Length: 186
Image (cartoon, rainbow, N blue to C red; front, side, top):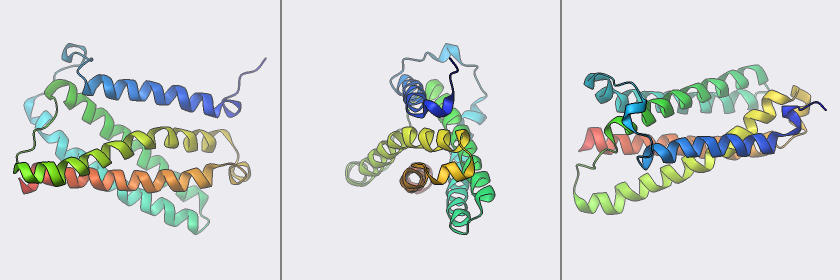
């Protein structure tokens, strides 16, 4: 019996989501000890938030271009932009988790009232959207890579992709708002 990814998109989506979220929550909750990752110079660790802000901004641009290209019927350029966005996201996540494991979370340096009523709600929405996006992104990616272009049009790729791209876009944008609040405004 032949096992084919195209016949198991939901199962693969679930497995990849569980592994991804386990890595994220493992890092956030301190379950991954710093000794398991190589140590970087302090200058690199300090630069990661700025690099990640640039990656998030680039991802916003590539998502918007991907949406534009698919609306124009240019599947090839749409695919290139969405895969580029995925690359930016993976780079962002690796750097974020690496810094999180070695340094921990960043403390909000601003006033308590801003922290409670502006920063925390924005951060919570950003995190929630990032978590929700993971299975959606795996699902549309797996549909895209396991089907021919005509078959993609007959799948849920378009419907779920619209939702995933919208939420991903908002999550990246809110991540940049968090960055500005942590490293620019305060």
